[in-house]
Amino acid sequence: MSFLREQNRIGLAIGIGLILLFSLLFFQYYGMWQERMGPPPVGKNYWTLYTKALAKDPIGIMFYLETGSSPFLRYFLFGLLWIWCAYLAGRLWPRHQHIVDRMFWSNFWWCIYATIFVMLAWTFGAVAQYYSWYACPAPGYCSPQPQGMMDKYTHFLSMGALAAMVLTVNFEDLLGLHGRTGRILELAIVLSFVFFLPMYWEYAELGDPARYTSTYIDAVTDFFVSTLGGIVNILVYNLVVPYEEAVGGYHQSFIASKEGPC
Image 1 (cartoon, rainbow, N blue to C red):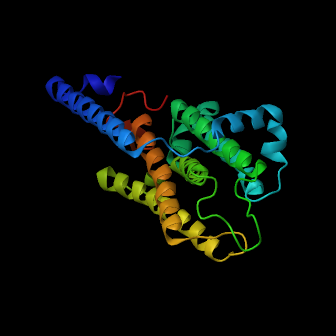
Image 2: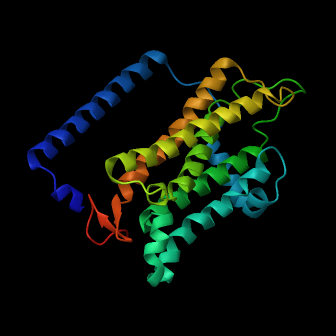
Image 3: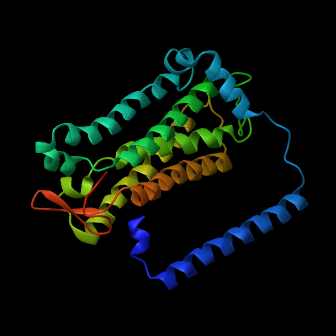
């Protein structure tokens, strides 16, 4: 928590006060909105179905399903290996730490967070295929809002998981960028990926009308929720992983402790 000790105490107190104020206002108006809106429509308890499916056959659901996007989801395993290998390489071979740091930049807590997020994206997407929540009732017809909010959850989680993998790459040092401009360009690279991939997904759905019915509103909300998943993990990464500049083959911290990554 060293970054808190470095802050102006009065400014920090005001900032925390504003966060609490807006949070209280949010919950106040959320309660008023919910009271006027009425109870939500009765739907499936996705969390219960999710846990039951994984308890029944976790290996089969994660590795042996062939429906829909199930084969693609299995590649998340390589994403997890990528995240951890990139982190552990420099720790296992400390003499080459500076070389590894120029290619990958993360720390232990980011790896833990990314692992939880990727596993949630993998298992929830697989369970959605297991229950055929995306299945069309007849050829050429799919509900524009398949099973309520489930479609939005999978979009948010999938894009967030992919962004977590890309964020491990140290674009700033790989491209020889420096300072604040380099940091902004690095984030812009990841953000451009976060915008591109959901747009490709929505375009691909239009090219397969036998499997997908993609209305304008549904496509826009899918795109928004997907990019939100990526942006959330960009923010988490920048909160958890210290920003450091490569100087003479080593990293010099700008905002964190002198010890570098965990």
